[in-house]
Image (cartoon, one colour):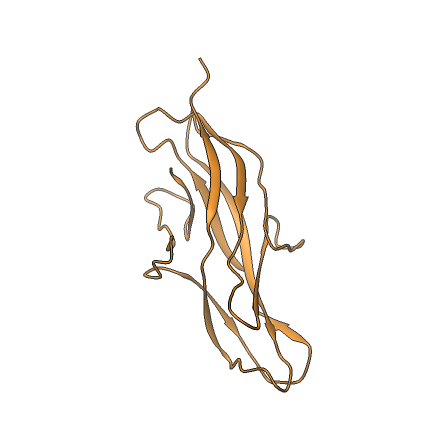
Length: 140
């Protein structure tokens, strides 16, 4: 399946790491000053890229879900389609690839525990963001 996140919006795409391979991750910088509450990184813009893999056997993608892994203690990854409304996951509209690749901007950020007792420190944090969707054949 070629429904992935990339760091650029034109071919050839600079795809980000998938399936735990962190060779090319999305990195967000978070400043932890232990002043209380939470703190967040600046939004990082990436692109959801849907292609037909060059063989014409894929017409579209449906049931798309993009959900960052927030399993690290004290770290919550949030995602947005517009950079304004943030959520734990997004479910973009279907993406038709019969005529051309489809590319949509997606924004991610880290929300981190900034309490006096947090074990977190100011650092760069790497995201693991699985993308799921249903491949559909071209309509005849």
